[in-house]
Picture 1 (cartoon, one colour):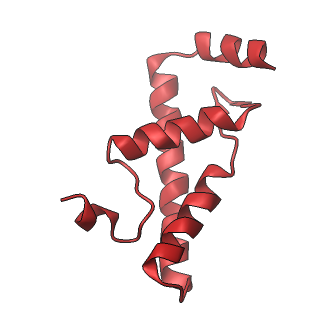
Picture 2: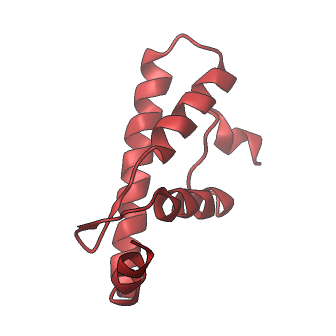
Length: 96
């Protein structure tokens, strides 16, 4: 499985990875909006719900289903470190 993942990543272009990130952000935004709108939980619980729903996923890269969670989870961690996604409903305000 690791070999297949490596081959898939090596055959991917910069634009493939940009699309991958864009797809991840769209998915995160959909989950985040849904949780924030529908949940009556406190913000910390909403944040955990957003996080857990978001990372429990194996994204597609260049049209191929990734076989391991770590590719998607690591990418979400990178996007979070770059302040492009967040887990707490008020994350943008909290990082200022």
